[in-house]
Image (cartoon, rainbow, N blue to C red; front, side):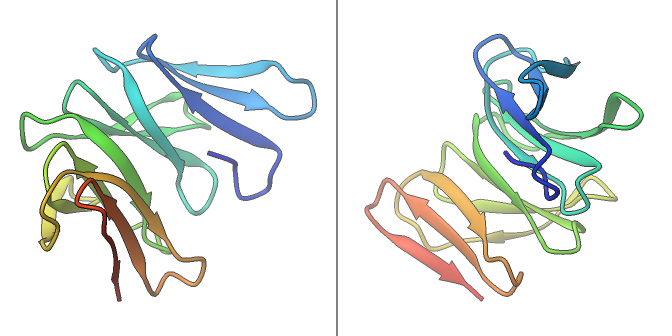
Length: 148
């Protein structure tokens, strides 16, 4: 995920870590640990000062870049997280799992605020429009749904 200012990006992988990279130097600036299994997705928080991650360990996490620590963990079901996106304000985090539902998390309270239902198979990707008015979900049911 590329930061809003386009100066850094976050990567993840099978080492259970998330790495913040400096675009100009090409070097790792910070390493964020905490997941117990592969990290499948990372997404910058809209203000660029934090990022979310989703893992095979059934959790999403919110990391604060300035404090170099985990702020919140989100866990509700025993399914791997496949993708995530934030609302324009950052108040809501949309997370997809190895099932047909997209969970809507209140990123401040750490609670599920709702679910988006309509796919027939697992959702593999979610994405927020630049204006924040629509969310797209893509599923193994060969459908892309727009939620507005």
